Amino acid sequence: MIAVSKPIPTSAQTGSVNQASTTHNEHDPLEGMCDDGRIPKVKLPDYIRNPERWRYIPEGRLIEGNFVERFLVSSYALPVIFFEGDVGFGGGVSITDIDFRSQRRREFTGIFLSYTTEEQQRYALTWKRFLYHQDLEEGGVVQEERSYVRTKVGYSKTLTRRFFGLGADTRESDETSYTDEVGGANLSLNLSLPHPGDNVVFDVGIAFDHHNLSEGKVNDVPSTDEEFPGLVMSGDKHDLGWIRVGLRYDTRDSQASPYRGWTVGATLDAAPLQSQNDTGARYGAFAKVNIPVSAIFHGGAVGHEENPPTDVIAASAFLTDTTGDLPFYELPTLGGNNTLRGFIAGRWTDRSAWHAAVEHRLWIVPRGIRFTDAIRIERVGAAPFIDVGSVAKDVSSLSSAEVHASLGVGLRLMLERQAVFRSDFGFSDEGFNYVLKFGMPF
Image 1 (tube, rainbow, N blue to C red):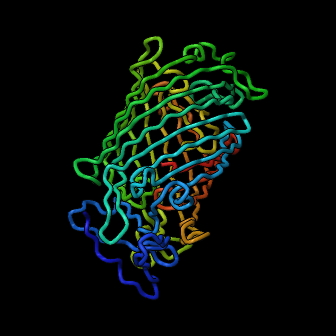
Image 2 (image 1 turned 120 degrees about the vertical axis):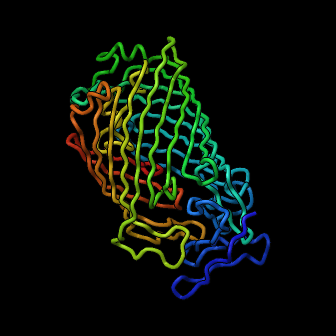
Image 3 (image 1 turned 180 degrees about the horizontal axis):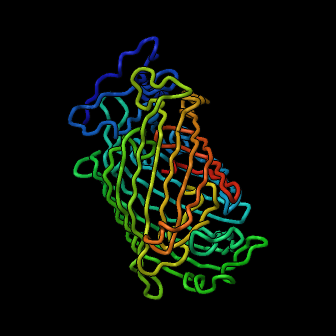
């Protein structure tokens, strides 16, 4: 059991901290929090390594009961509306339980179902369990977010996947489309070494995917099987068994929304088991850095906070290469959700790729929007960004390949530090792309 100090004494500046409910069965949604929803920082014992990497959840955000009894506190069944350039506007249902099996938020599960204007359908079930999670003597829990096990199964059918050919010099007019029907499952383990919260993080996973390809459904655009018949034929009815291994050195204070620190690492995604006895792999290196900067729209922390509003300059870069045989839709790509956000998903494809991005994450509404004591948006912000990158047939050719760039601005809604929704509006010399997603781009 971890012993913690009492919450920081309050004052007129910090506001009062709500203590434990006197009635055992009565849930106080502000227990362990200030009246305005701020979470005071608790002091962990000296033997807890890297305490800034343990997320504190106050008792007010923990509630006993089944899915219905915890509804809109730690369980949700909500409509989802989104847009992606390659699949159009979409809607569906997200059923999530961030306290699955009532283990004080140690486990998460979610069911996601969606359909879009371009007739994409997607169904997924995911589950995640944190490996290091402990109750605090004075209420609430802490969990180390680097170490967990996760699994996911899913099915999707997208009628409007885009492919422009290979290389950095393809033209916008080269656009083709194809239908990709894919089902799969994966299991992964992330572990900080040698102790919880330490800088070395190892991850390993296995996955299986099956792809069926058919004619694309984008109006006035050729079907990919007409323009690139060999690539489509080799990728149709294709099975891939994946092994993923990653290792990084990570000093960041958070995995979901870091305010300071850096990380460098390497990854290997190998597919030794494929249809037609093919084998291939993607491998590469990456680096990320987060630097806190002076705030523009707020004054920062009020007293000692668990998650103070912090403006950040964030930067990311990676280099990826390919060896062996992989279907064209598994080669490195740029464009879409996280890379060259001003271009449509999959705009640039080849066997090697590099990408760099920087964005200024600034909080405009540092105390967010309160709907009820239990339901709130913790804060609202913006993120102007710029992305650059290119692709080529091999790493040695990247230096001479045409460099592409996009810029834009994003909107950030933080429900809590581990739950950030973003919408990015990206612009490039080929027009505009809009993305609505869960989680930071890097």
